[in-house]
Image (cartoon, rainbow, N blue to C red):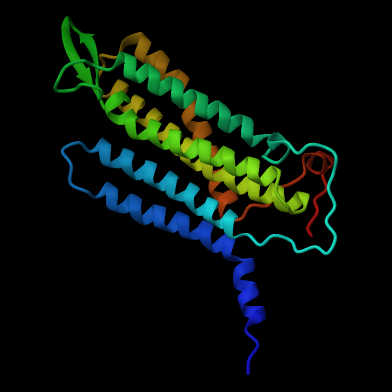
Length: 261
């Protein structure tokens, strides 16, 4: 009779990877379905698709973390030094993601304040004066589009913070805790950076649709385009980190040496 224990253990040992990859796959399928849904507004399906992808990525990582096998040690030791979340997350990328999240909230708030109040375009366009006439430019990140984004941030951010707190105070060696924390940070990064990129694209399309944006519109494009490039970089990093998280100690990285164990 074959011994199935090693096979079962190998499956459980990699179940966190399967859960992360499944979350990304489900997010891609959901995004594809949402993009193709019938709607009179081409932008709203895209908003739903990107939001669903980010939430599925977060859900897959959280499920994978819950399935991660904890070390079974005969004798457990504890350090007197307090474990802090900032010691587990990526020291360089975490501040960038926080900056992006703050920028996203600021852009959505500005979009909500400056959006047109016209009943036909309320919350999804901006009204400008063009050659003495009023014109509506869109899509604009007003409340019509920002509602799902704010909801996704309101759900995903506290859950990720809770997971990071649980990891920092939970069992496991330092490398394992950092790997798990990096995976969660990457999932949250996917949620944030994809939405930042979408908002930047919306602003760029709206302000370049006609020549009515004026100097203020040109200045807005100059300010937001670098943010869009940054979101592309952080999106790529977040995706790679979710697929295969491998935390590197900041001190080791500064010395130019890596631990391959």
